[in-house]
Amino acid sequence: MNELAQRDVTLIWHPAAQMKDYETLPPIVVDHAKGVWLYDVEGKKYLDIISSWWCNLFGHCNPIINDAIKEQLDKLEHVIFANFSNEPAIKLAEALLKIMPSRIKKFHFNDNGSSAVEAALKMCFQYHAQTGHPERQKFMCLSEGYHGETIGALSVGSMDLYAKMYKPMMMENIHVEAPDCFRCPYGKDREHCECECFAHAEKAFESHARETAAIIVEPLLQGSAGMRVYPPLYLKKLRKLCDETGVLLIADEIATGFGRTGRMFACDHAGISPDVMTISKGLTGGYLPMSITCVSQEIYDAFYADWDTGRAFVHSHTFAGNPLAAAAALAVQHIFRTQPIFENATVNAKWLTKRMSDELLPHPNVGEIRHIGLIHAFELVADKKTREPLPEKNRTGYAVYKKALENGLLLRPIGDVLYFNPPLNITQLELDEAIKLAKKSLYEVLPAK
Ligand SMILES: *Cc1c(COP(=O)(O)O)cnc(C)c1O
Image (cartoon, rainbow, N blue to C red; front, top):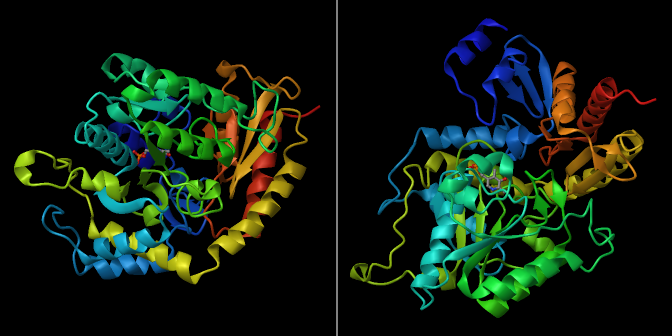
């Protein structure tokens, strides 16, 4: 362990970690970065193929975003957002309105993904209370869903890994069995199905729609569940069912927003608009913490009244609307408008699917390559035919992760699912390098006979 890493573990409690693991895999202290490359304090470089927790959109130290923040820094670093405002935040709301799904008209600024989800839940609850439906107090969510790790957000998530310990602290919600296309119980595949699994949602709505304020979903991609991809038809059916029953639809686009799925938002693939949309991660290009809970005019109007009616949405975060973060987010929108980001990403995504299928799919433990946009995941299994998982205690995904780090690739696993979620402007050369390193690491951990 180098000296800086030693000082780190002396004081710092890292996120999502068993700190004891840091005895054998000490923290990698990054000194600087450029594009997809991270350089640690010992001079070793790592290809960051996961956009540093899915947020980096156009490479590290992107000159356009860097300049935008520097320019803003000497004007205004932060100002209270209650009764005060700042030009970058105003311009950002205007820019976002132009790219949002049709129902979205108002923007409530928060400062991280979980806080945007909390605000969304509270808004939906209060909306019904103030429009004659105080009985609508529950939420629906999909199994294996992930919406952040504060108590409210955990309550609409279904992943035991994050939630099990805290169950007694959480709200009781209605968990709908999510699509599972890799292990489809109906024996279909995601390109040729009618979303037979939507029957679970229909059943839940039949029993619980009247007491439900909203359903929250990660549209098309359940990221933390292992990059599980499901068809747009599911969202179309869900939008229709919500409209018929008065249940609000919250699309959590924190991971999928800003081009990750090949369109600006995942909802765009289905041609639907949610009533509420949460965005964060890529919003600032992955530079600074900012999130927004984006809502329909109808929801906004249910709160608009004289103060003494008590209808206001009293919810705030200190760093809401931060001008530095807004400046970064504006630069991101500028890049989308002035560079052929989608054109290149679409070409590269197609190429990546082919290359990954050629290089990784032949391995006897690679179950499938699933993909949407530039996000490409491969799931390691014990048996390719039965899709039986590897024994959990082997921590195979973690072993590949460690091997990949040795080889200079940051390939963070979700259980036994490994994935690429690169910045949208990554080149084919860089992708090729990542595939080579991933393949090498995989075969070193699981030598094929
Ligand atoms: C990352 C994520 C969140 C939580 O965001 P934080 O900023 O980490 O709190 C919520 N929902 C989804 C879909 C995410 O990917």
